[in-house]
Length: 154
Length: 253
Image 1: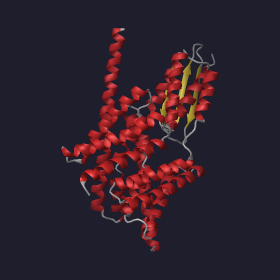
Image 2 (image 1 turned 90 degrees about the vertical axis):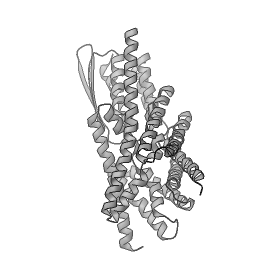
Image 3 (image 1 turned 60 degrees about the horizontal axis):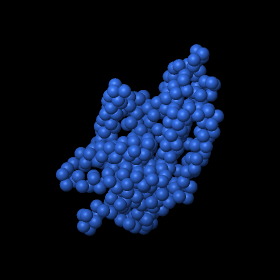
Image 4 (image 1 turned 60 degrees about the vertical axis):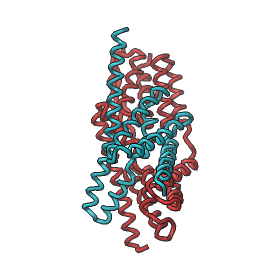
């Protein structure tokens, strides 16, 4: 199968996943659409980044950072908690596959593969965490400074 | 003004927020803001994942302490959004507490998507992620059916009120057991892709994200507690998978 067709199918499936989780978390109306589309954008970005970055860990970090920007911005526009957009958009990045193979290696007692997979799963999770933490802290910092300046000028 | 009733209302909102999936910072901030906007002298709140404690000192130097114990969560971001708006409204317009009390009750009973719709959603998610991780569309079909059954198992777990760790183990065991049965009897090709699609449904995504957000906000204790919970759940998912493989292998199906 052509790699582009494959990528498009994968993005579509990831988007269905994001929409699905948005429904399970009882998001409704306009927010449901925006939350689901977050998955579409973030996974497309993650695939496009493949052109420049070979490492999956770096791509996960960058697209998690993108998700955080998307969620923080929309949360302020829609006046709703950031979680609403953060969690659904990050869903396609959840390393479910990697976690599964870790379990499988444990079952088959392939301990060498088990440890390397387990570390890789943790690495991916940490990359996601760092992406989110970096942006969220930055946003907090910026808004704290802005509020301080506003108070001074008022 | 009835300070005790005010604190009770504020804590009710905080409690419902925590249950619906709010971060600790939001819960504490919301309780503090509500109380200060109604003119109390001092308010101290301490929140971890399973409990909220707040002490309020009013203008007549009375100290009132109330607590809430949270034993189960149900992520509901619409409810969280409504609670957030109610707390903002309380800070700006200061509505009568009786009115607030009624509103909290209404939000508590606000509707979710019906069970059959959640079943279909589970199926769609499981099928989609099976293809996402490289499975065939035939595998996706099997995965989707198991996803629907998985929702029913989760529902039964909810009724029996077993704890989160055990319920994850049970769900994971049943899901993997079904997947092994299907593949061994010629439905679906790859056990790996079918199980991966369904595992996505069990991984506690909100828990992990919130634990990170708690850690950034400086709520180290709550963040670590949540992280432990997430790791325990991940381990119990693994245990369920390994158990079901052993049972299938032992029975020689």
